[in-house]
Length: 150
Image (cartoon, rainbow, N blue to C red; front, side, top):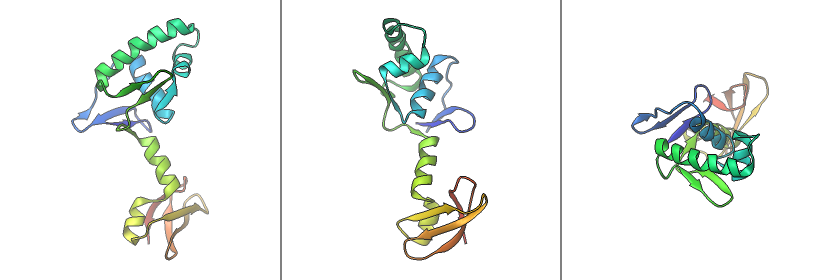
């Protein structure tokens, strides 16, 4: 299962895009996804129902978790005593983007056969990519990730 947060919100599986109801089910998924897949129960309740007392928030959360599991699958949410988390097999485009920013461009690494590529931003449209063995000029986007190598 993959959660798309950049651009139009969607959740996809190998069978295609899930049809989610409007309301708090997608809000809960988005909330967890933007917090690296895990939040404390109190933080979830405070985010979704800021004016509710903790007892009411916990009751609402219990119902929302059941509803979300109905749409995503029983194993999609992991409820621990103090936290609520997305299952570890659920990926997000935000996590992929962050990983590419930290560890370099995977496509460039494969083409060069090196174990690490570091890209640094020199202007909004150009930069340099330095494999561990040699230096190669590459094009990067404004965020600093490799797009192509020359």
